[in-house]
Amino acid sequence: MAPFSIVVVTWQSAGELACLAASMNRHLEAGHELVVVDNASSDDPAAAVGAWKGEGRLIALDRNAGFGTAANAGTEAARLLVLHAPAMDGYFAELHELWAAPTPPDPADERALMARFGMEPA
Image (cartoon, rainbow, N blue to C red; front, side, top):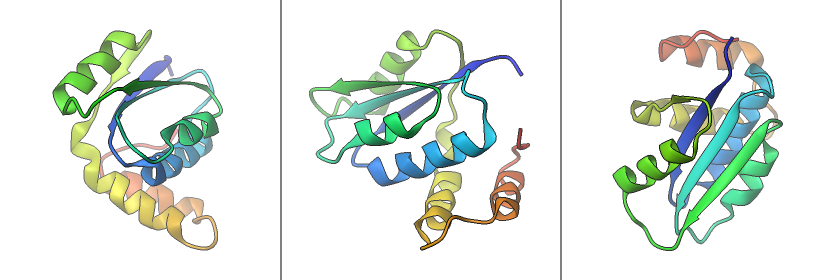
């Protein structure tokens, strides 16, 4: 698989980012890039970005500039083919529920979730 960048726009989403990083660590090779553009959150998105085993970058905006401005900043910063999927909110919400349990989810549950959203695990 060719390397790509995943651009994520956040605001107060450190918990969801941690779930995303855990899933990415399980399903993707480290050659991919995670670019997180944060809209002036008060939580700690840097910790979640640091949890990704590959290259991760945090672009911290000084205000909540909105989705479009933040997405543009992330796309401009990405060095590789960009994967940008704003329609994945439902996927990330369900992924968060899986990872919020006291024990890590079964990989089969993650694969089933990915299949429901039309993704094929690596």
